[in-house]
Figure 1 (cartoon, one colour):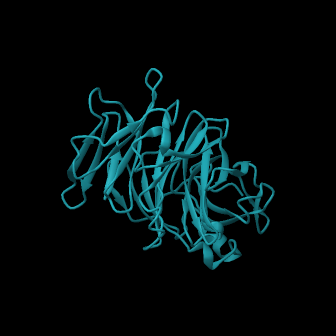
Figure 2 (tube, rainbow, N blue to C red):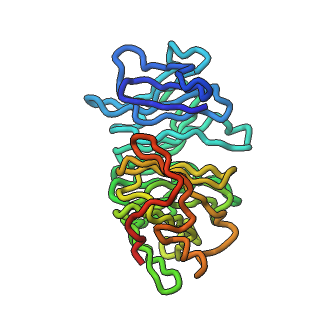
Length: 313
C-alpha cells in the first residue's frame, strides 16, 4: 500500500493498478496540513502528524476500514511541527502495530502506544535532543531495536528503544578516505534500516553537486567510531538529492533531486564488502555503469548515462 499525506489535510492510500485513490482519510473539522504518515504492519492502523497551528500539533489515527472518521488524536505529545511518524515493524507480536515513533521540530523524539486512547497513558518514552528534528526512524539489528534521528543542522543521532541518547555527530564530520581519495559530505539524505548493513543501518549522504554515497558506522553508540563508505553514485544529479528509496529485493536505488530528475541506480549489497575497491572506483565516473535510468521532469526516458559533475575526490 502506497500512502501519501499533504497540505490538504488528507492521507490517501493509492491503488497501484489504476493510479487512483482507493482510500481517503481526512482530519475531521477544519483540515490541517499533514506533514508525514505511516501505516501499521497489518495495515489496520494509520497515523499522521500535523504542522503547528496556534499552539497545537496533533498525531491523528485512523482505521482505514472506516476512513470517514478518525479514531483519535493526540495533541500534547509535541509542541511544534511533527516531522515523522513510524510504526514499529517487528516480529514480536506483542509490540506489532502498537508502538509509534514520532519526531518533531520541538526537539523531541517520542514513542507512544498507538492503541491507547488516553494520551496521558499513551506516551511510552521521550528523548529531548534540544534541536529541531527533520526526520527519524527505527533501526532493527541483531542486538534489538533502536532509533535514529536527523536534525535541520545536519546532525545525526542514535537512541536506545527507551530513548537514551547513544550517539550525536555532525554527519559532515566523518572523514572518509578510499585509496587516497576523500568523500566530502554536505548533507544527510536519509537513513535506511536493513540487515544488509553493519549495525542494521545504512546512511545515505550527499554533496551539493548532486553526488550520493552510502556510509555505515562501525558502532552506532560511539561518536568516535570510524565510518565506512560502501558506494558512491556520481554524475546523475546536478543538484541536491532530496529523497530516495532502496528496493532491496531488486538491488535498485531510486533518487529524486532539485534538478527535477528521478533516477534509478544499481546498488551493491553493503554486506558483501567493507569498502570500495580500486576497480569499483572506475564505476564512479559520470559515464560509469552505476546509472541505470533517468527521468526528467517531462518524464522522458534516457537509457544512456548523462554527464554531470564528478564526485569530489
